[in-house]
Image 1: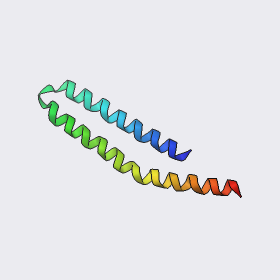
Image 2: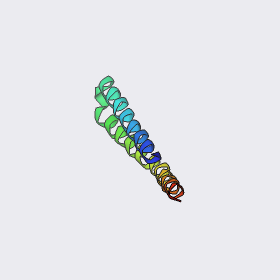
Image 3: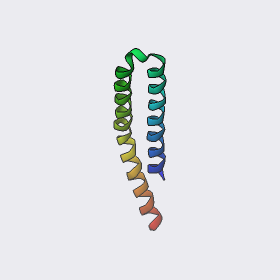
Length: 70
């Protein structure tokens, strides 16, 4: 359950980065290429920062499943 929640938040962060990048590129077309590169960096940072919480959620789910089996 916790893993699903973490994946949802990572996906939500990626959608937010995409929407903000699209809006910035639309608002300032002269720097469209640079804005999209920054957006790609933000998306990558979102995924990288989500790895730790995702790992902890996986461990917590596994421990909860072990305790419920006993």
